[in-house]
Length: 266
Image 1: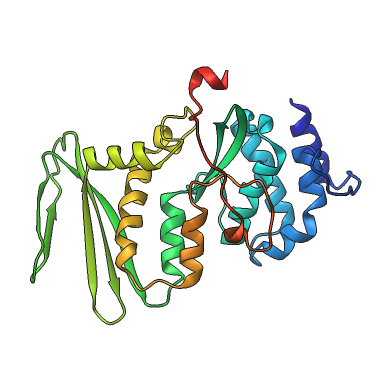
Image 2 (image 1 turned 135 degrees about the vertical axis):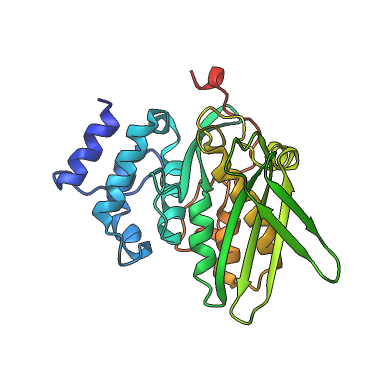
């Protein structure tokens, strides 16, 4: 068991002493010191104790997180807290990814498919939103223009390889829109815009379909009547931050330069 895990377990048990915030703190010390800020950022259904357990669980599931700079790890946790999302759980709402940036191991915050859906539903105008995977043996076609249409009839037999992804939203006034992306386009998009796409810890490795669905939903929601809170949430996606704020969307993102590969993480 790592020292980080031991200290987090002590924190969870309430045996740790309070400390002052300094730049040289460990991840554990920062979790302890930031409890008031964390508590204010959390929704009522998520307690500081639960938040601390999530931090412990994240490090337990991905030990490499314990080697990230403490400030980037806590900032990523604060991103999740302010969005009311649980990182690195089976819910797939958000992820904390070890990322080698300019030779330094930092923690990148990344929204998950379920997190994107949850954020979209916080808009009372959003009646429904979904994303689906299209396989090569499914019956599928769509058309755009003045009379857009989309038909998808999945086969009950062997569906074959993944062919495409699409997402649809419907509003309370009956309006709707859909977005379609081929698998090759999704992969090219992820390779270009998701800096941690090739990381061994990336959810693209462990939950490819979920991340692909998130990508097409993210593109779709560019055309939705979204609130400023949602726009702020999107600015936090796939970021590394090295400062803390009561509004993490106001903190400037770090310039990401290197992808953490299996070799560089070793």
